[in-house]
Length: 64
Image 1 (tube, rainbow, N blue to C red):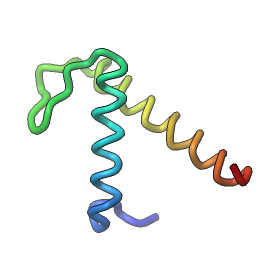
Image 2 (image 1 turned 180 degrees about the horizontal axis):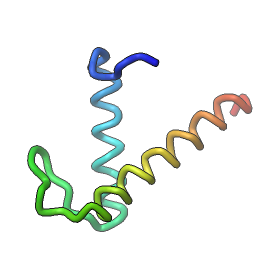
Image 3 (image 1 turned 30 degrees about the vertical axis):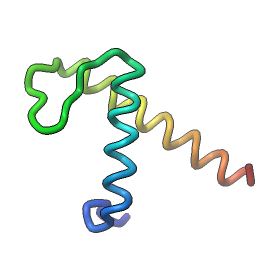
Image 4 (image 1 turned 90 degrees about the vertical axis):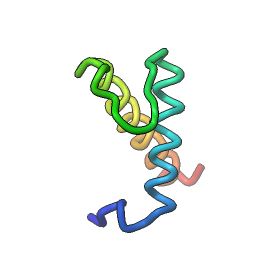
């Protein structure tokens, strides 16, 4: 699998998604250091990112 840090567009899209999801969950995620957030809060954001990426892939494979 390709490392997405080599594709600036992919990194930007994932960062945008991360901040959208954090906002939806009411988590105060900011650019840079986020050491004030709990592991649970960070895990929620990452988990929802994975869930959304899987949903997008399933829609693509279904031809929608």
